[in-house]
Length: 133
Image (cartoon, rainbow, N blue to C red; front, side, top):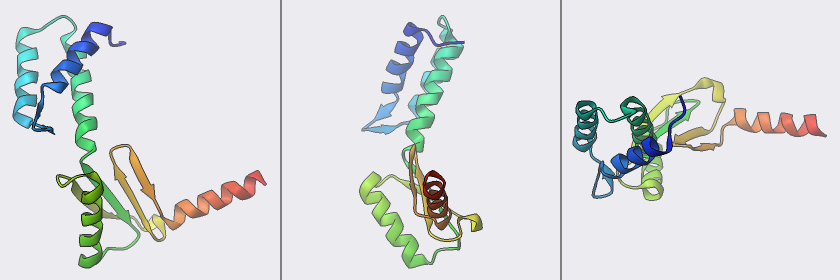
């Protein structure tokens, strides 16, 4: 079901109220969800779904998933975390995974931002260029 204008507006206001000092506040989020569940306004389920979507997208902006072809050493990891926190904020959390299919390089995903410097990506771009020529 498509979200109606009023539900979207309510959800947006609830999302704005879920921040404390510029950060998402887990206590406020749960209190808001509980209050909506108790009061059951019109289209409550749609309001909560949209609110959840907004919270999920905001939380993803502060979590980095770093993929590498091989495990990274501690110095490289520390430099990478420092650089990402300088750009995306000090509250950034990181998750490191090893993905051998990258062949080499790194792939970093933060929210909707993707930084792909992997060998696999370069080979795909090269293949696309040759296919177009």
